[in-house]
Amino acid sequence: MTLYDDIKADYFNVSLTGHVFADVKNVCDANQATHAYLWSHLLNVANEAKSLAKRFNLDENAAFTAGLLHDIGGLVPNSKRVALAEALGMDVLPEERRVPMLLHGKFSAYFAKDMFGVTAPEILSAITYHTTLHANPTDLEKVVCLADKVKWDGDGTPPYLIDLMRAFHHSLDAATKFFIDYLYHSDLLVLHPWLIEAHSFYFDKVAR
Image (cartoon, helix red, strand yellow):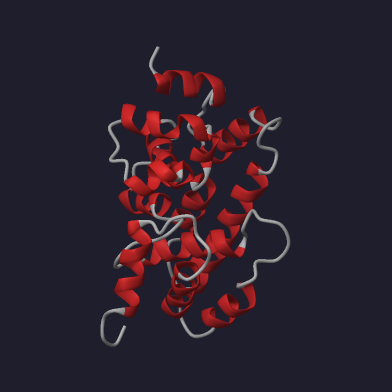
């Protein structure tokens, strides 16, 4: 048995039907004891992503699917994340070794394809980059990232929410630019290179 086999046996030990919605719900139900919040968060983000996609004339189904799977990699225990990433042949950045939580987007995309049958590159990239974005993000990536921030899984109301919602009235890019700057200057344990790239893309170039 590989480490990945162990993870699947411990956290994804349900009969998968090929219907993403039902399969994600079943996985979340199976992990209710330790991840009671997960299904609610995934569904909230999926619905918000779909709403934003409709607002900005994007693929609503793609946004919903990406939102539904964006945090499924969070089922991997923090203590096993670096080892699993290495076992799966992923490039593990120094910042991800220091803060293994940052690997969950990569895991989510991997699981989305390997276990849930999602193959669309645009959906997988939206899942991968949903925490920090990266340079020159696609509109779908922006929508999934920001849906996750609107429907965050923290306590209370996000401190940035009013300003973020106001930025949406201008454009999707305005909202993205606002949040990237907010995140970049917040009290993070580490600055992920993807976030640095995203911030540079929006703020170090003329007329962005």
